[in-house]
Length: 487
Ligand code: FES
Image (cartoon, rainbow, N blue to C red):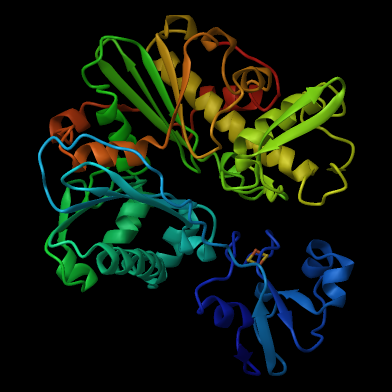
């Protein structure tokens, strides 16, 4: 694209909708790369974040050139690819028919997943996964809220545009007479979908501005000619969204007599403990490391992602999803890799003397910065888990079940997760990995298998606020170490 003299390169390229900008233009992530047809002067940030070869190829960081001194042709070279996982054959039970087609959507901060189901037979027709296009405004929910508060509804428009495109394709292909769409996700994502006021999410006392189920007409909202509603499910609080409510409904946590700890390893790590008939919940800003984001070789759980590393007679070997050429490392791969490295060059403090490239392949490398990102995510999650147990006055020995959800890869190697201190040793025998429960819960609502919890049930959840808690801070610091720890 042509960008005129005097324009802001970052804003111009971003307005095309596909520029990666995880730090939202702060010059930290190095993601907003563009290739230019002229040689622009190099800033100190670019000298730090770009390789010599990139600089030579006229690659620059768009956010570093707020006022162009000459007209340039810029090509965005670091686009997030939309990944389609293809048909995922399966079947769900339709308890009461709602519509010809059901579409459950999990709006993740990093990844959006849609699943399409035949409303009569329950056949799973398709599953579609793509990177949340709002990532051009930063990797975390706070950057998206900031952008939205600066009177900019781009985050709303971006996600609506992408979902609308997908629904138009679905309607053209399946030609349903009626359709029901369900949307879950964290509170910021559902608010941005609704274009609701996000200010209360970041202001004391941190409350959602929409706390009820919201119904929208597909015809009015998406301008698509099909009967049916979009149901946007309610959150529990500002940082406990419909995604965690979906998991609570899916596993009947309001009714269980067992002690169950549920942990979603998402960008916003959400944790619920069911104990003696009471639910405790908290969320921690874990960052997207478990989803392979912000890591030098990181990627989602897609074809070619390295999902496991292990030591084979002293040699580090790996497997990839669907056994294809490695394209990067996903969350489960990082857990294994760090566990393996702890046997060698990596200290339990997280210090590693130098960057490591494996198999002569730059797509398989790990840096000190990656380790630090991972350490922060691990410490945030584990200290949040501990806080729930402390509030309920129990220890890990009292747990009947530990459920781990998230898009980290197919399965986490439990021994490796215990080795790095993510999962407590006491849970070795009773930990299960449950996949994307936000999506599964959304499906259970659309098929009428489960009911949406009532307002009274939702308000009975004891929300644990970690901000400003010295106990949490102490646990967080302890769990920065890569070693098992007990409550
Ligand atoms: S360096 Fe992060 S957006 Fe430019």
